[in-house]
Length: 316
Image 1 (cartoon, rainbow, N blue to C red):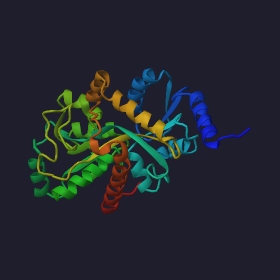
Image 2 (cartoon, rainbow, N blue to C red):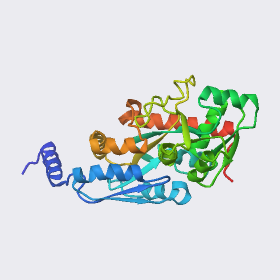
Image 3 (tube, rainbow, N blue to C red):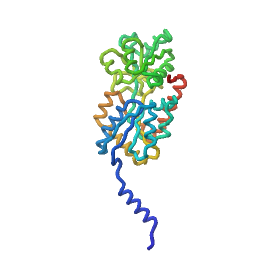
Image 4 (spheres, rainbow, N blue to C red):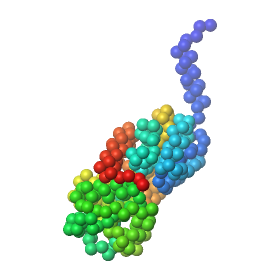
């Protein structure tokens, strides 16, 4: 009998495709670290019914996310183990805490949200605008303090960026947690603080804190009446945190594309929009999506590395 190899190969491929199970055909493990896993759980709640599969969200915070990233890096590249990571991951790598590069050592899939920061002060503070704050700081260098939830955190870097752009001298007062730092500002012990909206929402609504500005490229959906730093003359002040999903190297492009498409559809739902607005989350821009994501993450990593070096930040 004479076999025609191209015909046999084509038949074999068709048979394999017919027997292949669509993704996902079993529960998906979604590992978060470092940082909170709230974004992962919100997105998982939207994807799970779409996929007809359970998404098991877990958080591995040890070693500033290194344990979480290694668990995904070593997992089978089949799309059933994913990493939910924030830009804090890039900081821990720049500081030598974490050896994994999420861009080079993992496969970036999709950005799920952007989180701008806000600049707050006590409602009793003498300055009510950024211009008044800068003038106050320049009138008495090293008199004004700023709080943060710790050395090397993103809000710490946002404050260092503000110092450099405004040409002011401010003294850093780190606390163990962002909540403690916020209370110190509300009480007037420390003058200002960059933080995320969820951390201080209660203090703002109770009138104990005043928001002076936000740090994104535009006004936040949750705070439409608060100007951005860019509006106020700080033209390059676009400082935000991001959250992305990553997969092991070698994951099928078809699986990556499916996750991208399904996450984009999830981001359009009214329930997710409502939750994002409550938390101060913003939606990814065009520069964050698909094939643009990897290059964006590389640029952001370089930006954070440069800032850490220029600020001479060290982890105690």
